[in-house]
Image (tube, rainbow, N blue to C red; front, side):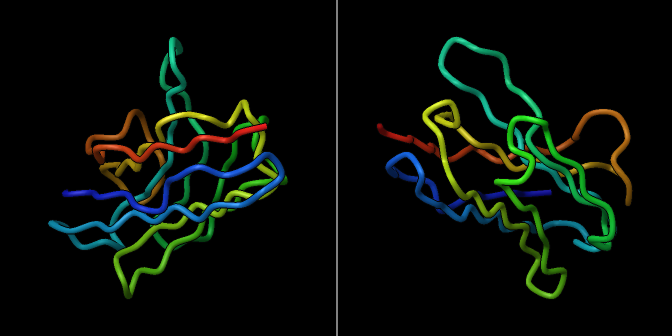
Amino acid sequence: VNLVESGGGLVQAGGSLRLSCAASGRTFSSYAMGWFRQAPGKEREFVATISANGGRTRYADSVKGRFTISRDNAKNTVILQMNNLKQDDTAIYYCAAYKFIFVAGSPDSWGPGTQVTVSS
């Protein structure tokens, strides 16, 4: 699976950004997707996942209520809508694809990442 993220940038605290991830190479509706992030000096961490048909989502506690993951299987795209951004959300955000329709184990494909910077 080939993944390419877009939509990152610089935003003030309290603002919003919408990240997109375009996928190709496998039937998009056959695998779960996720978003992860890595802040400077920290390990990569889970942000959100969504099952293949979009019916099941899961979020990290740190973003619950502020971020929404969704997918459009007709457009081979997964979206991360980020609202009420905080400086702690500053990181490189990565799109990831799982092997199966539900999240199991670690992703087996990753995008190159997109930078999100939240200023005070």
